Amino acid sequence: MSENTTPTRDPSLDVANIDAAEFPHRKLERLAGTRESRFQVVFKQAVLHEIHSHGKSSPEAEICGVLVGNVFRDNEGPYLYVNHSIRGDSAENRAAQVTFKAETWTHIQNVMERDFPDEKIVGWYHTHPGFGIFLSGMDLFIQDNFFNLPWQVAFVYDPTSGEEGAFVWRAGSSEREPVLIQEDTIEEQQARPDYEWKAPNETVVVPQKDPYSSAAIWTLAILAFLASFLIAMIFIR
Image 1 (cartoon, helix red, strand yellow):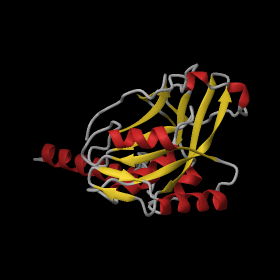
Image 2 (cartoon, helix red, strand yellow):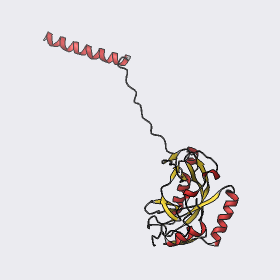
Image 3 (cartoon, one colour):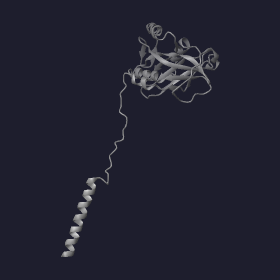
Image 4 (cartoon, helix red, strand yellow):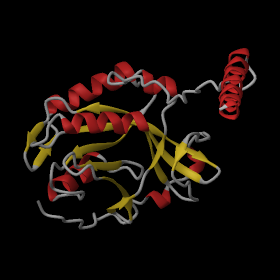
């Protein structure tokens, strides 16, 4: 794989050109990471969990899918919110390359119309098992031709190392940038198929003996009597 990040021919393709006023206001909650005064990508934790699960199911060949969500704005400016993903069924998966086929797009469009009619395809994801995080020549071709809106991103996950990264449009080039994570609620965590309930750590309290209990008093009295008896016998002798 070639780590080629040659810019596209349109330098105006840049998230800095996104007009925040075009998108609805939405407050971010349970955020892991620092929200800055610029465009940022926010992944719902459950989406990353799904991508990781999909990637680990194919440790040798690349797999792909699309990212679903919307663009919003808050007091810091516009941001991309990724709250769903769709697996790229019927994609052509090879050890060092993945491509979307016509059947893949048909499947994706059917799922979008059925499950996410009010949301957008905001990018795509694929894996690099053992290859690291970058966009190859084929990856850039896919990004240039199918995900070429300013707010559409590419996400790469290496199931071998666990490394991952997102690529956003900057001056016509796909540049890697960190993402923010919206942590799942307890209810959302419990809804996962692999969720396992764990008992909370509990401190075992050992009851303390009462030094003034009747049993303790009788014990002390007997010991005192025996001590007095022994002392008396010594003096008699």
